[in-house]
Each structure stands twice: as C-alpha cells, then as structure tokens.
Image (cartoon, rainbow, N blue to C red; front, side, top):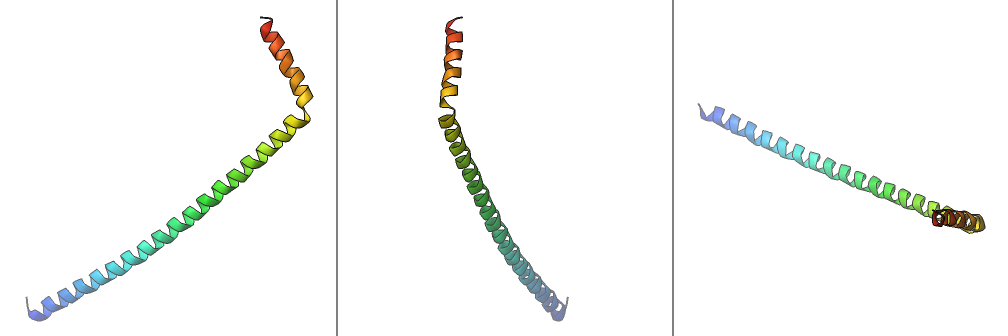
Length: 85
C-alpha cells in the first residue's frame, strides 16, 4: 500500500470512530432522557395510587361510621350463630 492509501484509510477510521462516538453520545443522551421520563411517569402512577387508596380509606371510615349500628347487629348475629354450633 502506498502512503496516501494508508493515510486515507486511517482518516476514514478516525472519522468512523468519531461518528461512532458521537452516535454513542446521542444514544446515551436519549437513553438518559427516556429513563428520566419513565421515572417521572412511574412516580406519577405511584402518587395516583396513593391518592386512590387514601380516598378509599376515607370512604370506608365514613361507611363504617354511618352504618355502625347495622354492622354491630350483623356481627352479633354472626357471633351468636357461631356460638350456637
């Protein structure tokens, strides 16, 4: 091979390495952005579930408070039925 051919090949290799490095950097940045977006959406989902559970707990407490006499009667009936066995 002649010097010009070797130089041309080495220049092509250098450019290819640079392009690969640039592409790797862009891919890494895209991966970081995607990871951040996923983490934000996961955090948002967790918050939504926490709010939902909180609302359900409040509804359960209100239902138990409002229907306490009926629930007590039902519980006593069940207990006396079990004791009668």
